[in-house]
Length: 117
Image 1 (spheres, helix red, strand yellow):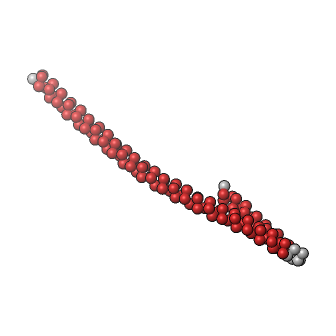
Image 2 (cartoon, rainbow, N blue to C red):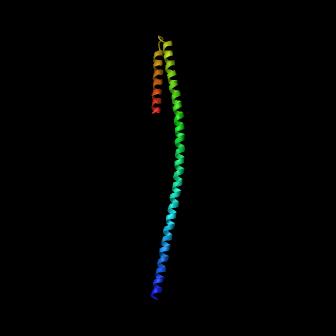
Image 3 (cartoon, rainbow, N blue to C red):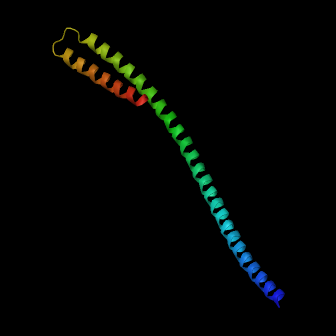
């Protein structure tokens, strides 16, 4: 009878331990599944970030090309202003306007320089 009672207690304890292990195993599996889902989401986010970086590089390159064109145009403006200055040399009233044009071009060049940084 003592043996039967002990066997019953051991069986009961074994069932409790098995339930506990099953619960721990299920929790761990759910945790691993959650980690796997998080990893998948992170990979997707990283992929999107890579696409954004490539797009940004392309836009930066296009902007750089536009800035180069603008620099060339400023050079042409300086030459045109110098030619205009020579053409109207000695005529009253034009020197101030030409100086203002030069000043405006220099201001635009400074703004362009800040964009390049």
